[in-house]
Length: 291
Image (tube, rainbow, N blue to C red; front, top):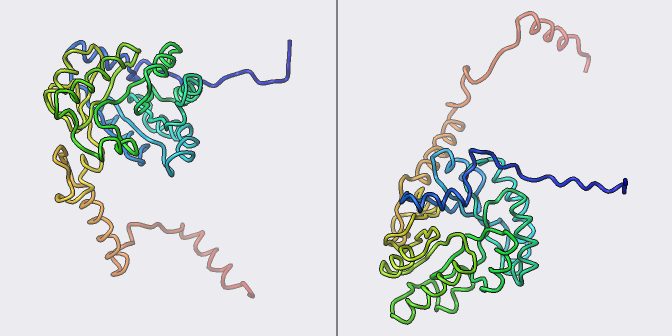
């Protein structure tokens, strides 16, 4: 019976070439390392380049001020990234109000997945909400160790975690309980090598280290570190720059600015000319123009 309402739902297609959370699990099972990049608010272009380079997983956060802006933006931002990077595995960072309870988390997670993400990340999610999400087929690739953003306050800031046996065990329990509640993989941040080893070796899901080292199933760097956006003195201990995109970009800007101001650009070869016959007609029009 026709209702006049459009019931067609446009779903993000998944091709056989697209890497998903399932592929990451297969990589762990085979002992293959997983590479992960954080694209830091400049996601579409850098995610595209990461995919072309063979990177397995990209984690991203929507642009905008914390809170409502990012909550609104994550959906169209996911579509923009997926359009530029159709095959890389995408992990979307949800904002805390988006997973304040199970039904809210499933609603928002499902929308993000429909727009093209392969999994979502809920920083500090409760076991109850996580279980509700996974019971409703929302794949969560989460986070343990030092929590990011405002949640670092409970640690006294962005600090190393697991220094004492008690703290190390708390991190281990959090990771284990997350796995038992259905989390499909996790990053572990700012933990010592021993804690990283214990979690990565004892858990069945992929574990990727962030500023932690150890025998994790893979590693992640943010593009500011990886591509050399920051000066050497600003680099964190765990960071490694594989190129200097900042110096390259600045050099290009300076050379362009110099050429424009000194007449080096554009040259004759950077333009083109009219056909001689059309040029003659054009000049006659100009000569006969009374204005």
